[in-house]
Length: 138
Image 1 (cartoon, one colour):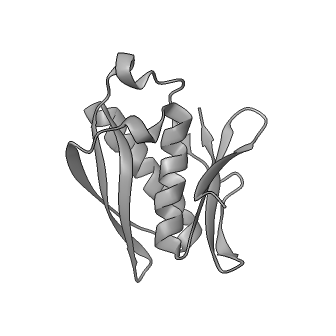
Image 2: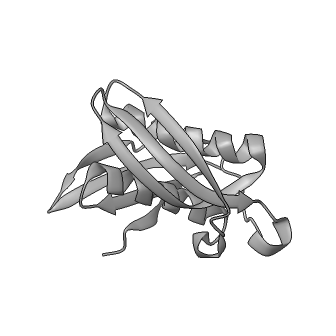
C-alpha cells in the first residue's frame, strides 16, 4: 500500500498518510499535501527548516502540522519534498522539512494549498499501522 494518497472531496482535496507509527503517517500526509501542488520527488533538499507544534490531541496536531508546513512555504516562498517527524507527549511535534525555493517553471505548481481543515479529520490505528488524513482547502 502506498504511504500517501489523495481522496475525493466536493470542492477541495483529501490527503491521507499511512505509516507504521503516527509520526510516519504525519510525514506521509505532508508529502500527500505537497503532491497536490507538485511532484515531491523533484524537490531538492537544499534547505532544512525546523517546525514545532503542540495540540490537545493527535487530530488537532495533524491540522496544526499541515498548516505550519503551508505557512513556511507561503512565508518563505519554498516547497518541501521530505519530512522527518517526531511526536512527543502532549501531544507535540518536532519536524525537519527539507526543500528549496519554489521555482514556478521547474516545479510547475498546479494549485495553491490554502489550509488544512477539520473536514474528514482522522488520525487512527488502521490494520498494523496508522493513518492520518484530512481535507485541504485549495
